Length: 248
Image (tube, rainbow, N blue to C red):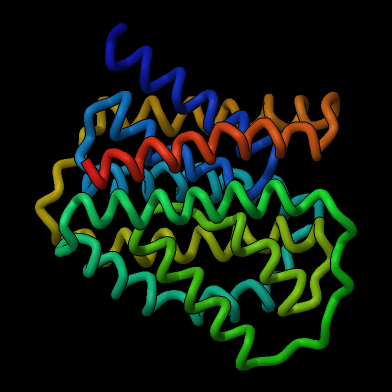
């Protein structure tokens, strides 16, 4: 199968997951780039940042037109993650590839666990605590910069539990945070010598953006908990594969 077809298929699947599930779909971008398209872990995390930025910015526009983005709250939360995202992005270029792969496997497993456990009763919003909000924003920025993932599976719960947003507003606002953090991480990697294969990245990102629209329609037809369980199972398998590869 040609590289172009693989890139389009992988992008469409990841976009479908993003559209149907919100946070978490982009976690599959890095393993797809490594195991299907032959990227190194360092190149895959950089390419993933480009894909995440494009898809998140597109989805942000959609949520903003629906009034589901809390701009001031999101900007403050994102601001706390800008420097950690840039620092983590520079650190990632110096980390051995097996370590980077194992770290990504751990985050993928965490994302799967979050999805398995999120079908229970929703949390009640808590009073906003600036220190906790800054810590959560910084942690999310570091994860985005180091591993090239959007971190929606971490951002949405943090915005609900730490900043007291309702779920719909948390999903929309998380896209603002993810877009800002991804751009910061990309800026930090701008001077690196990591090759960017635009012939793969561009169709991958385009297919992901289009797939996200179909994912929204899929979410209206299939129950959210069922989709989350299916995706979490796939994600856990990917995490196990990557951990085995890192330890090989």
